[in-house]
Amino acid sequence: MGLMPRDLLGLEGRVVMVTGAGRGYGRAIAHGYGRNGATVVVVDPEVELAAGVASEVEALGATAIPIRGDMSVGLDVTTTFEKVDELFGLLDGIVHVTSAESKTPFVELLEGEFYDLVTQDVKSSLYVLQQGLRHLAGDGFVTLVLPPLARTEPHVLAVRKAVEGLIEGASRTFPGVRVNGLVPSRDPAGEEHDQALVRAALGLGSMVSEGIRGVVLEVYLPEPPTPPELYDLLRELP
Image: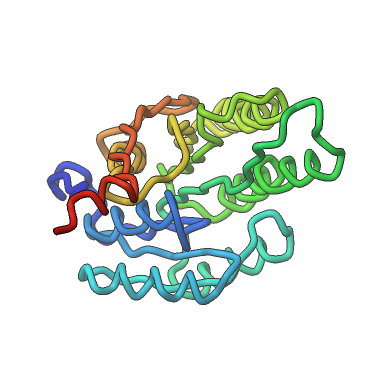
């Protein structure tokens, strides 16, 4: 599932850090890089989740290490990259999955919730780019996974556009690094239903995308099948 020819992707033996990897898109992307031969650094604010996903990646035949790290906290970000540097040296790539969400109607949004959105998505992306640009090997890559298109409230759009601005600015300032973004069409719905995003993340991190930078791609994800209603299940009972 989600496999591409390893000789085409050129990910074998590459060291790739995936943030927010304990669940959702991050977990699926970590699995994808592991399946394709990369060494995966699994980063998540919850160490138990990071350790669990690292074990899953190792079960796929890849090397993985878990690190507890909240990318919206500057000290955590610095410590995370220092640990990676001690273990592996320079990274070949980073996939940063933004984590904040808001279903609050715009007219009911409180200041604190907006600041939380900015911290979780914009500030974390800023920190990851700052540190990542110092710890990437030549022709390394950074891929940011932005808030889904399905979130259309003005405050969420403002956050998404701010992250897109970081991608554009970093690409212009550091043309030797491939900095790109992915915008899924919806929230995570399970790894089997999110493979289009996984493949896009693998593609942007592979040699296939050499020379591509400053691009933000919208990724359409099919809606998962609707589970049967309880009434329908009961009706089928003898």
